[in-house]
Length: 229
Image (cartoon, rainbow, N blue to C red):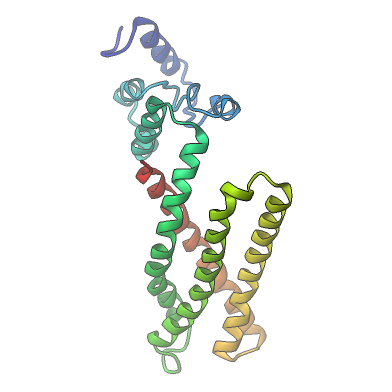
């Protein structure tokens, strides 16, 4: 049975996919071909080559995963129709992401302060005190982000030099490692408790913050991708 907006051959292919209960792969092996060519011409999403095919598959099997991924599929197929290369998309994504990251960190401050407030003595520490700590720590993180934004501005000039790429990667590793250690050093200095219990509490809070922060970053990545023009 032919599907609206599709050729008979495409319709048969889609019907075969679902009749065989083929697994739904949203960025399947065709992604390797896409990367090799540097563009999106061979990209398929959920076994669809175009947005029309993706919509047709949605009509047959509108799973929760497909519904959640729908706006991203629409954006990626939009890039494909425009003939954009991966490097152009990546460049636009980096610009949007770096602009939004400081704002996202600022909005995340009250949430981290609330987590700290939950796990500390309410008589000794007010919510405002934890806000001071989070402001101090995220000011440090924003400084690191600002430094790498400056390095990003140098990419068009120095990006082709191996020594520059090496230094950039090395600084990224150092900044990440020091950023992790800085949390524990700042926690110890601010809360003034060097006991083993305090260390485990700091570790627990760091892990909880890591999960929530990762969720925020992943959300920011998705939003940034949708905002790329």
